[in-house]
Length: 290
Image: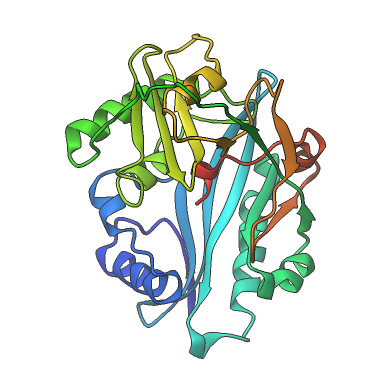
């Protein structure tokens, strides 16, 4: 039994990690790797037995800009253990290893935990915290749809979007910076049909519509350009009656701000500076989840 990290370029270990992620969460990161978006920002830390990953906690480096300052946080994710190795303290061992390696180098650590693991995370020094979501009702009578869907089915489309993400201006008060790999994880997999372009604003939008509600996950505007989010949302046409944001906008004027509630998920934080999310009524952007 050994503790290993920094092995994403090891084909055998990566395959074993993907197998366990598939068994546990139905996830596979291989195409993310092959497409070049899995960088050292996402780093599995694993217990390995006879060449097989049997337990894992992944470390994802996320930098957020707040009030002109960049804070360095770690998000922990892909917490998983093979059934036959559970109740042996392996996840605890990995957490302690991660704290030893990184805690004095970052401003805080956070994760999103399932309800069944609530007591475990509390014992590991995490505290439950709140996030807040912004929304508004939209009068769409007489509006016309002006946004167009952008295909996300080949490399040229991905490169175009990634370049825009890297240029910055995501209209967020709590904005992940210098990390395009996570949004690209989503738009090259689950959200290929959720990328739109508003030509009048020269702005890309990652969003999805369900039952007359538009959920906007990310707005990618030209650098230094001010964007009226309500006007942007009107570009989705007459069927939209409510708009919900998957991030905290710079201005919340005229919006409803409510505590975010997600079934079977708690936002846990460790470190004083992570309290900024609850204190300022922010949310971790949905496309920053790893």
